[in-house]
Length: 114
Length: 111
Figure 1 (cartoon, rainbow over the protein chains, first blue to last red):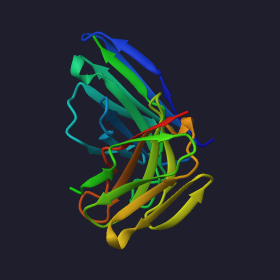
Figure 2 (figure 1 turned 120 degrees about the vertical axis):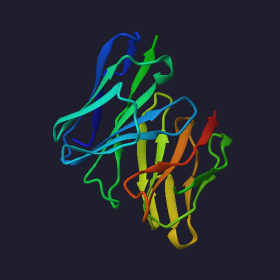
Figure 3 (figure 1 turned 120 degrees about the horizontal axis):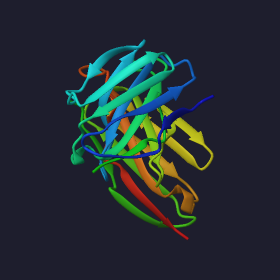
Figure 4 (figure 1 turned 90 degrees about the vertical axis):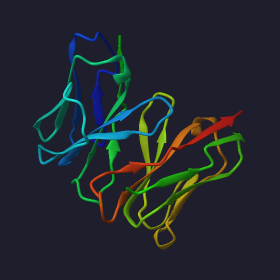
C-alpha cells in the first residue's frame, strides 16, 4: 500500500459545527503532516507529527486541533471555523521527519465553511 | 526562510510538444521534490531529486544543487499532463523541518 487516504473528500460545515478530517497511511511512515491550500496558492504547512507526537505547529489557530491516535492515523478536529478557513486540506506522510525523505500526499479534503 | 521560484508561471502547449519547467531556490537543499497537482487536487509525487538526474517515462528531472536549480522536462505532452507542477524543497540548514513549495507552473495541454 503506497497511498495516503483522506476522508471525507468534500465537507460543508457551518461556523458552529464540529467536524473531523481523517488521514490514514499503511506505509510504516513515522512522520505525518497537515497542509492547507487556498485556491491558486501553494500548500502551506500547518502541523508536523513525528512518532505520534506533535513536533511543529505553524502558529495555527486553536480552532484547528490535530490528533495522532496511532502511527497510521492522523485526524484534524475542526470547531468554530470561519468562512476564510475554506480550503483544500492535504495530509502527507514521510518515512521520518528528517530532511532526506520524500513525501506522499493524499488527495485532500475540500472544506467549505458557510 | 528559503525562497523557491518557479518559471514560467503559466504554459500552454499543443499535444505532442515538449517543455521545460524551472525551479530556482535561494539556499542549499537536501530534499527536492516535483509534484503534479491534478484538477481534483491530488498532489502526485513525480520525483524525489535533491541532486542528479532521473527519468520516468516521458518525464525527467535534473537538479544541480551547487547552482541551486532544478529542471523538469516533459516530452510528447498529453492532455492528461495538464495541471499545476510544484517544486518543493527542504533547506539544509535553518528551518529544515519544512517542505517549502514554489508557487507552481500551471500547464495546459490542448488537443
